[in-house]
Length: 166
Image 1: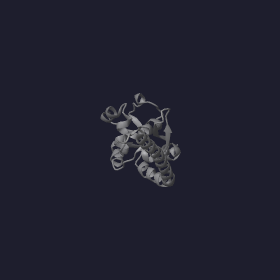
Image 2: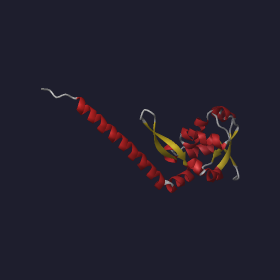
Image 3: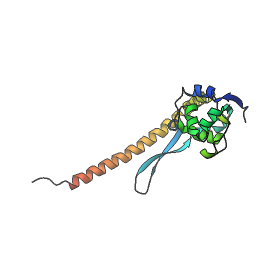
Image 4: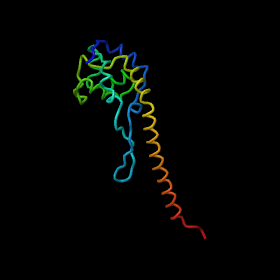
């Protein structure tokens, strides 16, 4: 494991406010169909998990003041939003601190990714951009094919059921 630095939460938050990441940019997706034929786009894997070992080199321990402790206790989504500009990375904080639920998120010293994580995530996005674009295009193609078949099907039934005026 990497050498762990100590930092105040405010120092990391100030840097993180400049970034705006979402799960959308860090996840690969797939179209699934339920038993009634409805289609859903779901995340099937994410770059955070793929690069987890590399990301661990950028861990700090944030020492929380009493006020910060009370603010973030049981609220990893709030801390995620403050640190990384999105609530969607709360699961990263849970995993990083070896917990699985928000009720376990009760720390005066919490492991967080330091300031370098924003730059590293940007680099990962660049490295994965071709694969990500291919995945997005595959999803768009599948949704478009489904939508076009649905539209033609609806149009077909509409034409059949309309009776001409005589």
